[in-house]
Image (cartoon, rainbow, N blue to C red; front, top):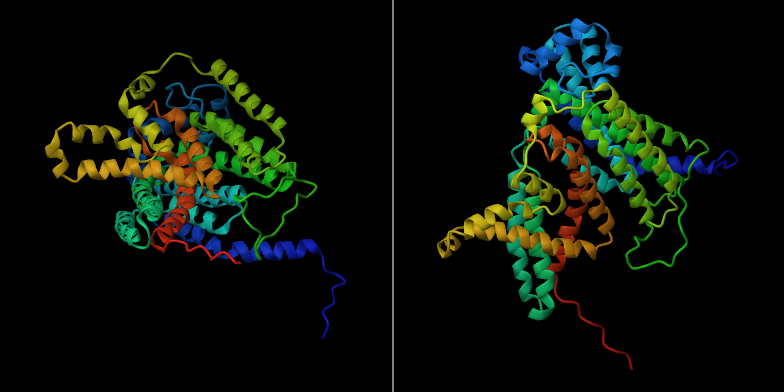
Length: 464
């Protein structure tokens, strides 16, 4: 029986292929969303935190939700956060002083962020495996699991296994592949994020909601703009290079519809709402600029004129904030500012993971030769060597721009918070891009392990 193709529309086939590629991967954000919802905080202690008590009392005393757009937020420590304050206003109106209701809202915000992580990586890479791995890593940060240290141990074991590759051919031919495999495994073991109290600060602590509300709107802004460029930016003609990824059977060419411009509007609204939620959002125009560079490096005809509204909105926010919020440093702000080596080591951990232990390394070797009898200087030194080797190896990988781009976007996302004493929710937005970097590096490092353990290539004999 012949199939009637008279009603076939090419767009239907594209949608069908897209669903086949992506539908199985939706399981990952779904699982972690349910996990966060089930493990949400419900106890009355949610409302007992001192900041929370003062914040809710001032909101009830004011009795005017929209007044927060014209001045300081309810803790009156010189922050402009009217949008995240509305989230507390909403909970008070719906739940009163029922702590479980506040906990539910916190959990829902975290669930939305997990799904938005999936969307951001999907738009940036259009690669299901990378998207799934990044969402898995970001999701794990929301739950208390103890197997991350075991995974790190597995990569240390793989590093030792790679040494066997030295016997798979001539030493001079095997040296670099083995060094790359060992260094990559050591680097990846150090790269895997440990528990940073994300659950407590974002799901189980109400003031952390300022960061999660901001992250929701920031990720919407980044994902929407990335979708606008991915679908609408044409590709510059160029000769294919060895770094280009080949098309596969699952490759689907997406095309922008007539309403693609609407994604710019969504991105702009997300930017405005993020700026009104939390001061960390000042980095959002930098992240959107990073999206432009991301696609520009892929030979896309990026619409650079959009930088005008991105940075223009930031300028407007700064003018508004200066006019409605006191300019002097509050007591809380003065208490939280920090200087010194810790600040720069935290920044270094985003730019060069593995080198943030340089202080510990020099501290251990300063004890003299006896320190070499302990494991610490060797482990810390290997971490730094592994970082250096991995960065060189990443530069030669087809995924280099994804890896370096994710690393730099995470650095930018964290930058303004480095000058404040550590709180885990400062890393909430940056951890999306850190998760992307880990997801990119994972398959790359495993490829190096295979190369290290494989025999040297044998050249085919020259034909006469």
